[in-house]
Length: 473
Image (cartoon, rainbow, N blue to C red):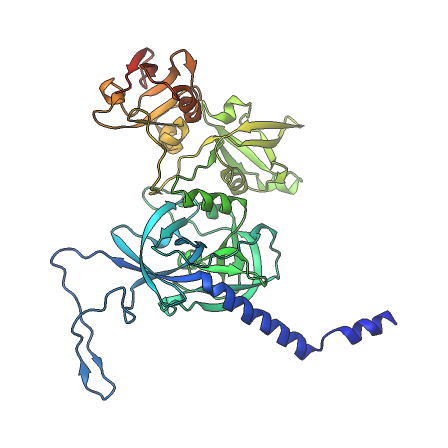
């Protein structure tokens, strides 16, 4: 009886298809209001010649343009292009970091065919996310979903600007399913980075979809059937050599939201640093039933060493999440912010234990764009020692980390700190008699100090420390 009733209430196949079609049409129409086309124009150098295209007119006669169409013109066809997503009604556009190039100008076209000159508000190479700003105040921000909750087989819709064909602001749509999760971007080794894993996405964060994501769709929206953005699309993986039939997106998860919130403030995005070199288990160990990764090396002076992680430890989980390979450890630790406490499940000499480590700061490679830096104190900036020098460079030079001090990274010329003799590369261990181990502790120690402040300064390679008095002005 109940089976017959359910069958009677179920929509017929044509009705179900029509309902799905209607849902897709509605989602595309609504979400497209938040997707923009981005044109990137290389700044011209003095004396550079312009190539004018001669095209046949409607009556067959050649038309020679009187001037080259500018980026604000409807006829302008950009050579370099991408997609962006509105994340704030006051003109903030999220896109992919890798589509931005130095010495370029940017132009944004909205769904209302309006064109705006844009500038970079903030950019973070490790997440491959960047934020453009335009002079607008009535945009439609896209609602954010939960990319971490996606399952294989879910329907998704991709909105973007493939090959600049959506340069009029009318986003092109494609749809498909979530083909897989936690995929890895292809590494791109170069002379400066032989590993080529420059972003968190190289360690296994990507959403894979069979929706078409061609060149130009980087920075577009991957939305679910509720119209919420669950991923920011990228064509970088395909360009790097992946099969072009596959599309990829950065998931909208807790790390994504933290990065976007930081970029909105124009601040630097900071990532946690553990200080270990992980290696995969051998095939024999895996066949024997072991899981996790092996700690090959612990950086001297790092938080890992301080909190008791040892070489040859077997790390099986991070905050309760199982770890299956070395990339997995880098990914899970790398998602966390500075000073976050991470719980490592470790097997040592056959015994299980949990070690809690407060993370230091990871040295992010690449050019960051920070328009609202932290305020300097009397002309100087300090930083975690782990973030000042790349671990590979430090290891090659036989240098160790120092967890009991901060390092000076910038000193303004003729500032009170400069006049007192403080220079970039100096270490500061104490403010008066108070020890300072982190930038936060340093900022707290010097806060509300109106008179002279005594700093204990150390120089790398020298055992002696000196007291330096920094006046207010």
